[in-house]
Length: 532
Image (tube, rainbow, N blue to C red; front, side):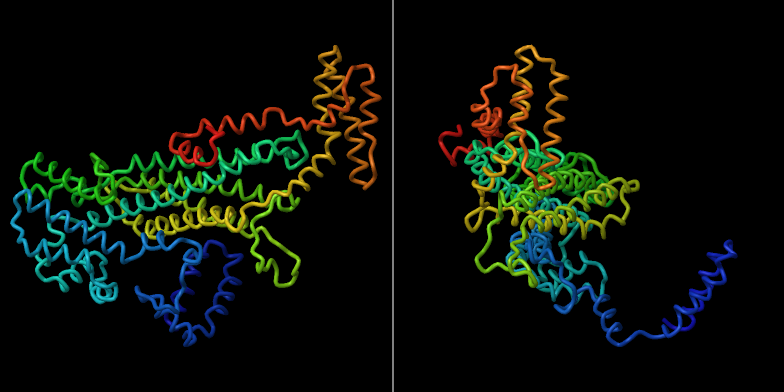
C-alpha cells in the first residue's frame, strides 16, 4: 500500500466518522498508527498475492480439505476436466441437432467435435486462452477450436454461456445425487441389518439425556434409519424434479434460435431433441427441459437439492451424536484399527473420530443451505450475476461434503463394524432396573383401584431419595421401599425385576423394516429371509 492510498484511506475513515466527534480523534490516531510501515508488503506476501491472482494456481496453494474425505468419483464430477468434457458434449449435441434441422454444418466439423469429446484439450491449453480472454467459456471454445480447427466455425452457434454452464451444472448435480443416493442405499442396508440384529437387545432409554424407560439397541437405531429414509425420499424427489435448461437463449426467449430456424414449433422440436440427447447421457432420456426460464435455470432447483442434502446432514449428525454419547458410556463403540492413535499425549484414548468428523462435516453442509436459499431469492428479473461465484463454491463444495459424510458413514460398518458391548449395556440396565419398573408398578396399582396421582407422588419421592444416594455414591433401598409402599397391591416383584419393560420395541422395529420403501425393501430382503 503506497502513501497516497494510505492518505485516501485516512480521509475515508475521517469522513465516515465525522458525525461522531467523540470518537473521531482517537479513531484517526489509531488509523494513522495502522498505516505506519505499510507502504510495501513483505516479499513472501507479494508472492502469495501473485499466486492468488493466478486463476490456475500451483500445488503450493491452498487445496480444499474435502479432497481428503471425498471420493475420487465425486471429486472427478466437479473437476474442471469433467466440466470441459460436458461442455464439448453439449456443443456436439447442439451441432448434431442443428444439422438435423437444416443448419449447414460440415460432417468434418461434427467429426472434429466427436474427437474433442474423446480427447479434449488439457486444462493447461485452456488456461492459455483464459489468461488472455478472462472468460472461461470463450477460453474453452478457442482451445477446442485451436486443437480441432474443423470444429471451430460451428462451436457454440446460437448458444450462450448458460447453454453449457447451466446444463452442465444440472448434469453434475444429477450425477452427484445419483452417487450419493447409491451410497445411501448401501449404507441403509447395513443399518437395517444392525437394527434387526439388535432389535431385541434391551438398553436404558434416555430423554433429556437422563435415564428413561428402556428401549432396545435396534429400536434406537431404527430412529436413525427412519431419518435416513426421509433423506433418501428427499434426494429421490429432487432427482425426479430436475430438468435441463436446454437451448433457451440469452434471456430464455430463444431469440437467437428463431433467427437460425424460424418458427416456434421447429425451435421447440430442436430443444426437445437436444434435451433428449443430454438426458440419454445421464440414463434419463425423459428428463426434459424447463418450460420457461430466464437466463439461467431456476435457482430454486438448487434450494431443493440442498434441502435434501440438509436432511441427510441432519440424519447423519443425529446418529453420530448418539454414537458419541453411547461411546462415552462404552455401550457402543466405533470400529478401531489396532494401530489407531487417539491422542498424541494420552495413549489410552480411543476417540469416536468417525462420529466427530461426521458432526463437523454435517455442520458445514447445513451451512450451505441458507446461502443457496438466499441466492435463489436474490435473482433479479431474468438473472443477476452474483449467483455465479456463489454456485462455484456451494454446488461443488456441498456435494463433496455430502459425499464425505457418506464415506464416513460407510466406515461405521468396516473393520468389524460398530461394536455393541452387551455386557456393559446389561450392567447399565441392571443398575437402573428398580427405577425402570416404576411405570409398570403404577399401572398395576391403578388397575387394582389405586389413585394414579397419589401413587405417582409416592413413587416420585421414593425414586428421588434413591437417586440422591446414587449421586452421593451410597447404596439405595428403592426396591424394598417400593414393596413397602405398595404392599396393599398384588404385584409379582420377581417377574417385574426379571423382565426389562421394553414394550413393543422389537415388534415395532421389525415391522418398520418390512414397511420400508420398495427400493430399500429389496435390499433389506437380502439381509435375512425373516425380515420380509
